[in-house]
Amino acid sequence: RTEREKRTLHHTHMSSSQGFTLGARYGKQSVPVFRLLRKGTKHEILDMMVQIMLEGDVSKSWLKGENSQILPTETQKNTCYAIALQAEFDCIEQYGHALARDILRRHAHITTVTLDMTERLWDRVMVGGKPHSHVFSAAVDQSKRTCHMVVQRGREDSPQVTSGMRDIKLMKTAQSGFAGYIKDQYTNLQPVGEHSVVKDRIMCTLLESSWDFSRIPAAGFPTTNAAIFETLIELFAGPADKGVFSPSVQETAYNMCVAVLKKFPEVSSVSLVTPNIHHYVYPLEQFGLQNPKTTGETACTALQATDCVTTASGRIETRVSRPAARM
Image (cartoon, rainbow, N blue to C red):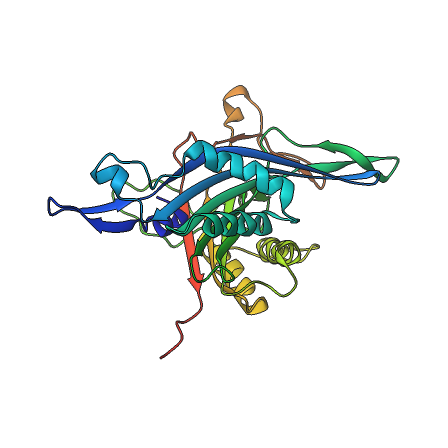
């Protein structure tokens, strides 16, 4: 399970007459909500996928087959669209907070609303060097903003918020190595680095990033989230003219997390999932071709890329948190 999934498994626990303990919650998943906001001639869009999970005094449906405590999941879906129409928001965090508060306000027996939301990103089309007022484009495999939110009764103004970005492909074509690892009787991996035969490699990953807020950021979620993600990318890349050497994905991921914690005091922890996307030099020597091919100062290499979703690949998970406050 992902770190987020582990954190969401906090069902309300209830005892049954048979001596067992019941953990129960319910909700609606995969609700596609698209909000179009026309501001004069300029239009704004927000393309979301929403999951709601509810906890509280809901045990009768499980223990007695009585549904008087159940808010139908179809009603929950309808509520998603009603709040998209009625609430004022400019990001998924604000939308989720309004949605959770509405459910808690209208249903006194519900104690906790947990939301998982993704925003599919669209780009405003540029025409003649100017952003179009109402035309947008998006790749089929869209990058996504994410938000995991828990809102509890009595703490409606203090939601637990984890924002993030996922499905981001990152690649550096130089300044990466991996050496000094354990070698046993089954190791055939060749080292890469300054003191190895192979001096450099491509480092590529499909990034999943998230960060926990200890409070609502003063600059707002959109501005703060953009600045956090920019910080992550800057640490991955290094200076534009020369980059920065990475001896391992692990060290790079750790440094990325630490940079965010140092810069943003409202963030309590940062999590990164960085699976390897490998690129292997294709063996063209069997056909009498030299690979790489060098012509003057230009070197061309033909490689075979892997897919970290369907191909065996390394997976690195990193979570860095601030020290717990002493009592």
